[in-house]
Image (cartoon, rainbow, N blue to C red; front, top):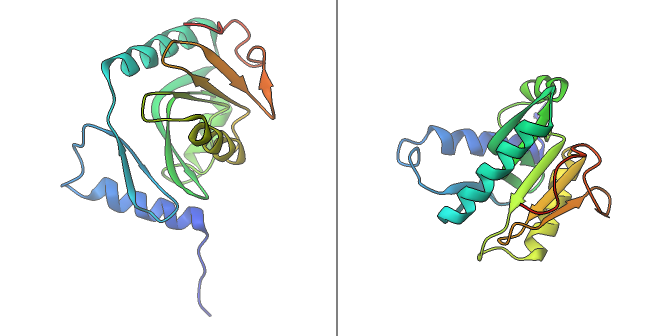
Amino acid sequence: MPTTTTAKEEHQKRWQEIVGDPLLSDLPYKTETNHRGQIVLSPHQFSHSQLQRAIQKKLDAVMAGGEVFPECPITTGKGVRQADVTWASESRVREMEGAGDPPTVAPEICIEVMSGSNDWDEMKEKRELYREAGAEEVWIVTEDGDVHFFAEEELQASGIAKEFPSEL
């Protein structure tokens, strides 16, 4: 009897091939895969890294009982996406550890920092993919440092990280 695999399992397998390829191990770009398993590279600007670091520092300051992760890969039904910054509770980290590599379970908070190569349509798709993988909130940070919080719909503020500002 043939064994069938899910799309997420196929994406995890493809990701392991990419991670294991010595020619690809030192790429200086954010690396993701699309729904076909093709590699998608996104070069960062320094300002992007500065915003990522500001988000990480602020999350560390206002959140307890969890961990902040930069460039966290998440397996979705449409490939592996890497959220720029994430926050996961200790229990979610354990759940993620048991969900394959990269995990098919998203942290509670997934954050994307927009750059000149992103648009709101791409951010909408990522929001949907992270939410389908279990993210409770997805935040989009514009290049100007404005933070947009989303759950099922846009929020005025985070319901999880209540002290996180709407502007960095």
